[in-house]
Image 1 (cartoon, rainbow, N blue to C red):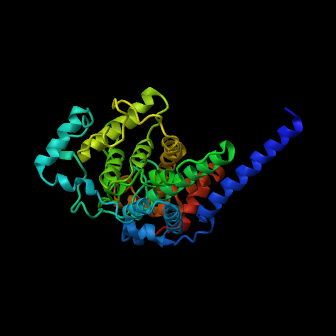
Image 2 (tube, rainbow, N blue to C red):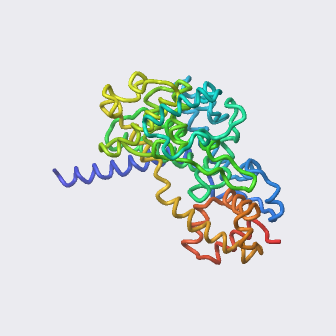
Image 3 (tube, helix red, strand yellow):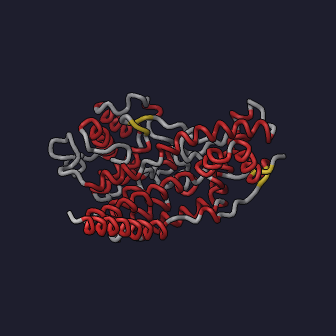
Length: 379
C-alpha cells in the first residue's frame, strides 16, 4: 500500500475516533471537577440518611443526570418508558406472584434443580421487602456493590452505572468509526443502565450504616439474576435481557458462556418462563441465541470498571480506618459501628472512592487525610 494513502487512513481513523468518541463523552460526562462538596461535622454525618448524602453530592446528581440523558436517547418509546420507570422505582415486581410460601418454595425447587441456590437456604431466599411494588431504597441512594467493594457509598450505584454507560456508548461510537457498522444503540444503553437494577433491593442500607450482605445465586451475586428476572418480568425485549445477563461474563468461549446461560435460566425460573421460548437461549438451551449478538459483549466490556474500583475501594477503606482513629478519635470498636460507617459513607458519597484513591496514589496518605478533613470536620 502507498505510504501516503496509509498515512491518510491513519489520520482519518484518529480524527474519527476523536470526533465520535469525544462528542459522546463531552455530552455525557459529569463535570465532577467543578462539584461543590458540602462540608459537615461528624455529628451531622450521624443524622444524615443515605438519600440525604446522595442528594447533597454534586457528583452523584450530575451522574444521575447523565444516566437519565442516556435513557432519554433510547429511540423505542416503550423501552425508554420501561427503563425510566425502573430508574424511578426499581421495585422487585417479579416477586409479586410469589406472595405465598408455597409459591416461593416452588420457585426455590426449580432453582435447586438448576443447582442455583446451593449457597442460599430457603429462609434467606429473596431479600426482604414490604411491598414488591415499591423499592425499599431509591436507585439514587443505593451503593454500587457490597460494603467492602466498589462504589460502596450512597449514590455509588449511580456513579458506577453512569460510567459504565459512557464506556458502552464510547465502544458503540468507536465500532461505528473504525468498522463502519452500527450496533443497536437502544440495547447498548438499556442493558447497561439496567444491569444492576436490583442493587437497591439487594444492598439495602442497614441501621448501622452498612449495606445488606449479598448471597450468591447461580454462581454470582444474587443481584444479577434478580435484575435480569425483573427485566424479563416487565416484558423488556429478549435482546436487552440477554445483553444484560452478559454483564458478568461474555459468551465468547464455552466456559465463559456457561455463566450468562446459567443466569438466564435462573431468571426464567424466577419468572416462570421457558428460556428457549422466551428467546433467551438457543433451541438446544445450551448457548445464547445464535449467532451471538455483539451488544452482549459490549455490555460485558462496559461493566469492567470493577477491575480498578474493587482494589481501589479496598485500599481507600483501609486508609479511612487509620484516618478515623487518628483524626477523628474513633476507637477500634467504633470502626465496626455506625460512627465510622456514617463517616466513610458521607466522605465517599461526596468525593467518590476513585477520586480519593487518585489523591492517595498521586499525593500520598497525608494528602488523603487532608482531603477527608476538608469534607468532614473533626470534632
